[in-house]
Each structure stands twice: as C-alpha cells, then as structure tokens.
Length: 205
Image (cartoon, rainbow, N blue to C red; front, side, top):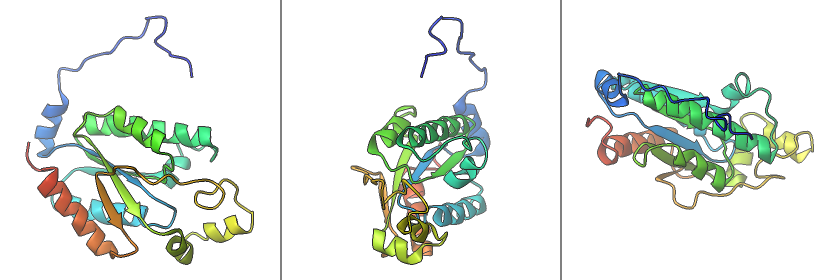
C-alpha cells in the first residue's frame, strides 16, 4: 500500500486538548481490549456483557464488533489473508482514535494471525493495548455453532473459514486468557472486570 505522506504534503495536526485531558473528563484511563478467538468462542457475547458492566460503573466504553464492521466500513473486504489483515488494520486504527478520545474500546474479531495482532498492538502505547484470548476448543465452538457457520463450512458452502480450512494462530503471549470451555459468561466477565480494575488500574488516572 503506498504511503500517502511520501511527498511530504501531509502533516500531523496537533490538538490543544490532549488524550489525558479527555481521560480526566471521563474519569478513567482509555485502553483497547482486543478480543481474539475462534468463531463461537464467546467474543461478542462477553464483549456485550462487559460493556454493560462497565457502563454501570460509569466507564465510557464502545464495542467494535467484527461482524458489524463488515456490514459497514469494512463491507468491501473478503476473508482472504490480505483482506483479513486490512480488516484488522482498519479496526486497530479506529480503536486508536477512540482510545485517544478517552474511551475504553472492545474490539471483538477472530483476528487469526499473530503478526496482524502484533501489528495492531504496535500502534498503541505499551499500556493501552490489552490482548484478550477468548479460548475455546474447536470441538466446543462447533458444538455451539450459534450462527450455523461451522455447519456451512463443513459442507463447503463457506470457504476460508477459520478453524476449518484457514488456520487460527493462538496468541503467544496474551495479556489475559478467558477459557470459555471452563468459565461461564458471567465468570468470564467478572474475571475481566477484576483484571481491568486491579491489574490495569482502569479508574486510576
């Protein structure tokens, strides 16, 4: 992809209001929570429940759900390796803007490749990106199959489906792992809430 700034005609426009100012306005830190895991692992469900818990604690939060993004801003992207990479890049860039706005951002998308997830992490400050591995066995995800996608993939009706005919690379060093084969949705959410407040210090600015 060409560098649009290669001719030197595009310049960063600074703002008199800083990210720290916006965090103070919201009353908490802003971070990106990057949920990765197989389809059916529980990413979107946990993200929605976590959002509810955080709103109740007066935390400003927004979800970037992979399926929702593909219905709008990323609707022109396929599920090829190249388009998955672009899907992740765009999601990360949107997330960075929202973190700069002072929000807690939850991105819930399969993001199957380690390199792409690390590229997403690289655009954030070191303490602003939290990789959440929503772990679940392929067998359990197929058993759940809430959208009927595994069934279609097994029949050959969906190509390049993660876990079937496209690889999923497990995170090498996630910041937190939520194993939904063992934990209920409520237990998963409470584990994340505890992590955010006790480890990340979300409300300590």
